Length: 92
Image (cartoon, rainbow, N blue to C red; front, side, top):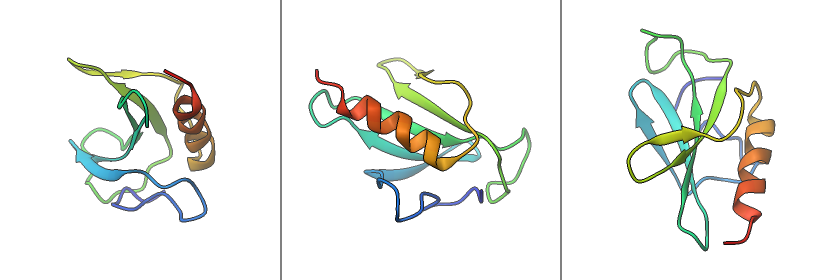
């Protein structure tokens, strides 16, 4: 996967927006009822350039004070989007 803005292919659920955090791009999804933000973040190797190739994705929940992991490290965009889809479909 290329660490770049718009890294989610059009065939998958699209994020509300993209955001660069440190040197990894995040696709940010907002829960429609709770307004909780979930970040699907590419994990480049330490000291990698922002446009490097990555092989890991992490799903995080934005809490008031920090971002916390909500799944194990994933290796495909499809599996990461499935995790986010399950989180977004949960009721309040």
